[in-house]
Image (cartoon, rainbow, N blue to C red):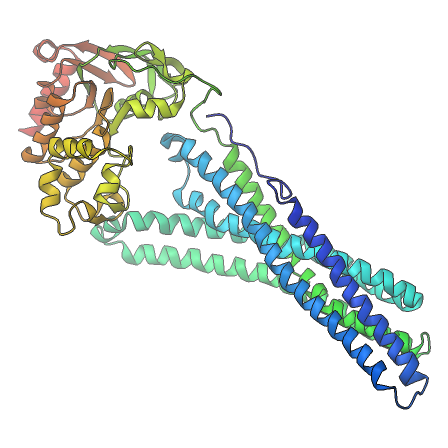
Length: 569
């Protein structure tokens, strides 16, 4: 598939109006602060400093009403700011989450297996959370606080240039100091994320392989490993918190310093008392925004680390190339051709044809490339060279979704999903008609399985089909692939590790399926049901022919199954 678009713009996707709303919110809060300061200054200069003994009730009421309205307006704006900020962050991460998942589902499983599953999951949880925090709690607060601080300082400079310059000087000093201290936060955030990623990858792996840990008596050793990783993560998080704490301390110190500077100037007679009171009011109203700004760098550096990881994830090649505006596949009888198919390091110039309705047994030693061949045929992976044709149509020149509808696949890398049996059965065709569902259930013996379950097709299973026997899982996997009667059926070790009764279901499927079938197998008896055998060794197609002829000869197929029979004895 073509490269997925990169990270969305914060102001894109209809979010621009939220940014405008935040700017307006900051100006509104600045207006409320300025109104409050001017009312305080006027009250001090007229009633307290001038010595008016008893202001009339009407004047007191006007002052109280103005201050009350400013306070209520400021409170409403702060409340609205939080909602708009969260809406901005959630809208952004929603769009990015969909891009990430689209890229994930467009990436071949072979490409995904080259990366840790835990690290991939961390993109959707930790990295998206870091970006949301930056946008909702960092960027939004930066916009509002900047507007509010700038507007308040401008009014303060008009009210009292001396005090305005004093407060401005303290704020500039505090900002410069925080920028210097904040340089170390980036490295601390990177280290914390690296430690979190390693721990997540390890735990994720052990969740899926806890039986291995238990079977080989390694629980204590794995606990020690998690303990070491957790201890390193703890140290990294504490180090990150140390830098963040310094930044918060600087913001608190800036507020305190501005207050002290205003008092000193007022005491030394550098400004009128009324102006001092008004300035103190503004500094007090700016205290909360300035404290919030102390965390902006923390969110910024954390988001930058996550942004780099997310960009790298979206830049990964998917292993599939989609042609934009490609025509759909035309329905056919299911003739499958591999023309000089090459997958670097796995398959080398494989050329073969499965005629419509044929059953092809794909055989070879472990690691020969059989599973990769089926993945290429199913268009889960595009070949690095050569082409795959279905009824004469190059799959790479048509939408991948069309190929997936025309092919059914069963294999060990295609586990059942959490949910009901019916959801798994109908996964490739959620709206399948009842008669088609019943046909497949009967063909695969699923009707017998669900009859023994308390909730029938509504019985819930865990990831991988936990709760069902191996035979039941394989019947369900076969049913899922067969729903809709695909033109080509691809079976990768569909009868491996099954008893004879369960393996009989595969025989029934091969007999009843009218389309073309490729079946990877190590069973000699399975070859009897095949029309032709493709034998692969070291990624090369070394032998093709009817099973009886190949088994009777002295070629690779005969040697492979002769060795298997000797090993079975």
